[in-house]
Length: 301
Length: 306
Image (cartoon, rainbow over all chains, first blue to last red; front, top):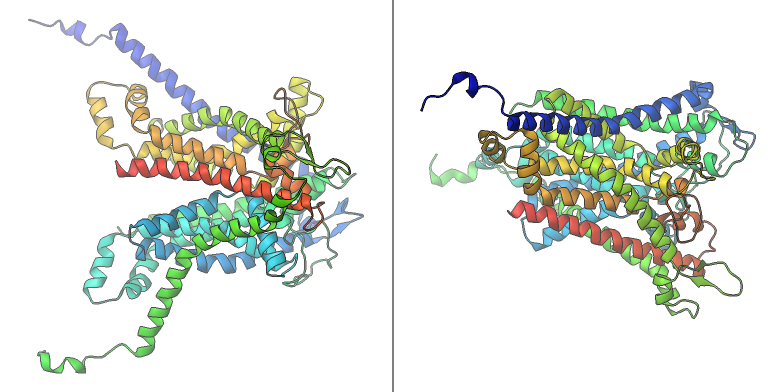
């Protein structure tokens, strides 16, 4: 049988349909992806435009005035720093060590499956349930009262899974041969982790810690009943306004209060608070992304 | 070196050996701390809730199946959470109707259709989308979204199921996209190559090969999205309005289980019946999310075994 070359390379109706479907599918999926980005840009732009009249450094450094209808967000800003710092001090060591246990020590048996499940569940429990836990355990049972301490501990437990998950992932990306080589030289398990595994995965672990910061800075529900208050009188620019036992203000809580509880607020103030909170969180996240990209580009294997 | 003088080799000092053992114990303890915390969460919430179970005003059947929530009524206190449960599920369902097609579509686009640069950009955008705090989402719902909804639909109030649904959809998109993309990435390349060798286009590969092969992973992605939406508090507190009743349409205001706790806990006197019932709703939420997360994990584990 001889084939007519001309005929062989023309598109049959079937091929045409196939290509058309391919184009349509690609365009639909692309539109769906873009539809995800548009809201992000739109929202950020809208918030910034609305916030513009109040948006300056003075807004962060000033205290709220005239029943929170004017002024800035300093007490809330510094309160968020307190809460984030304290919760980080608890959850970072605990989370990193839990990640080391799960990746380096745990064998694949039923017990460690339960540990794994517990971590997943800890991440999945609603934030308001964490708030109830914080209220029942830290505020009442441990008698810490409504305080910076209770709120930070609640935040720490809530955000620990973020650190565990990224530590695990970072450790798992270190090739097994690195460890085997080290063991063959007579190093113990811990020496191997300390000298070989951790130095090679520090970027990933750091990313997780940074993500914990962004997560805990934005949470509202867990601190609402455990330590954050609507208003606290603080001196302008005071760096140490709170103690472990005192209640504090927080940016996220402040935004909630301004937008739902306080009447006659100057319109740009809640927007500016939202922009400060969003800006802080996104800046922290971008730092994490930059560190991760840098570490990945330096990877030797 | 002969066997006789091995003792002359330098030895690790005792403190180093003991220190290492202690450190390993601490690491093991941190490892199991997650279990301790999960049990502690259940224990402390249930401990606060338990006394109400014996109260004459409280009936379990009423708690689960009655829509009448009058916790502060002076004469006839009723603790029915059905309206709240329906509120939670109506908002979640609407959010999923929006988020699942878009999320899976975006996951397919990222995993199969786009180049490396676009892929990196999209993934970073999704990460940033996931980072937006829920109270900011709530604020967006309260201000921007409610105004848009009032203008477009002519509804008298802009904070309603539609508003909460859209906000929750945007919030659960990132998790659906990233887990969905992982599921598609887990399908071996040999499947794609085999289909391509038969002359299939990318879309045909996606429809006939990848979707059937990755369906469990995609299901897990959807389940985790549902878990996220059910547990969300601040956004729905601010965006869904505050009406404790069974909704008749998507322009009705509702209140969800989570928002109800956040709204009322501050006003409920410590250790009163009302306060304990709110903790009991917390137990209910704990179980709902536990079951969803467990199901998602079993589905994912099922894939790994294969």
